[in-house]
Amino acid sequence: MNWLHSIEYPGVTGLIEILILAAVFYFLVKFFRGTRGAAILTGLAILFAFLMLITKFTNLLVLNWLLQKIMVYLALALIVIFQPEIRRALARLGRRSHFMAGKTRGALADPVTEAVLLMASRKIGALIAIEREVETKTIQNTGTPMSSEVSTELLASIFYPGTPLHDGGVIISADRIAAAGCVFPLTQTDNLTRDLGTRHRAAIGLTEETDAMVIVVSEETGVISIAHNGRLKRGFDGPQLHRALTAFLSRESGGFGGNGGPAGFLFEEDSND
Image (tube, rainbow, N blue to C red; front, top):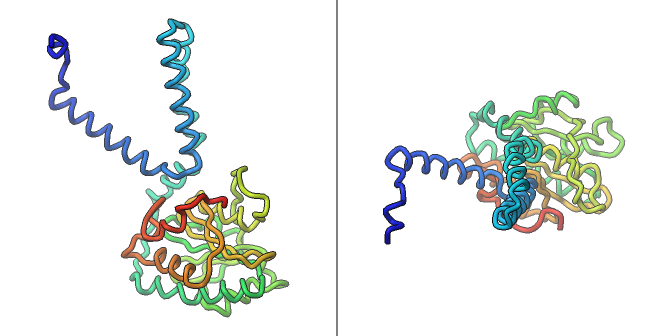
């Protein structure tokens, strides 16, 4: 039992530091869980831990020293890996709040759902982004400003084939259509299925940079998809779409809430199925 006397207890200051580090680690894991870079981070951690143990117990001192030095530069690699997530988090620091009651925002679910179902039944391609807290002003500037009331007829008219704005995306900010014909950033993810077209890639790309929810209607199949937080879920029917919109628009429910939230059931399965 002599080894018990050799243990150095952290004291009050040490306990505070441990609690702070534990809290930081917890929130980092919670924030990055389910993101594209999470699997990469896990793989890197396992690889480095394995190599450190191997080089330590086999007395490969030079390699062990080299790995310790490389870990110093791992922070730069993490910035590159988690660049979309970090950019989204920094954008939320300067976010603006919607001073609109949840009931008013929730009322948008009806016209948006009706318009999407109408376009899906006629196989009219559509791309509709609903802004939440992170502003999309830069993306809006790529299209035509509108500031129009959200209605089923207007949304269907915008995406009707042959109209000047049908190829771009629509952005709904607060309770109005802020812009149409917008160019969304395409995702750089290379593990998507080949049947996903430009609209789907643009939907994922926008949600990688903002906390918006994007609804996609496939022009080829009429299938309805929803993208959020860099993930895509396909095959929505009317009731499912309306529930997802209501949950996202409801201020009281907190919307999708990052990787979880009331509507988190939409993304329990793999995003590329």
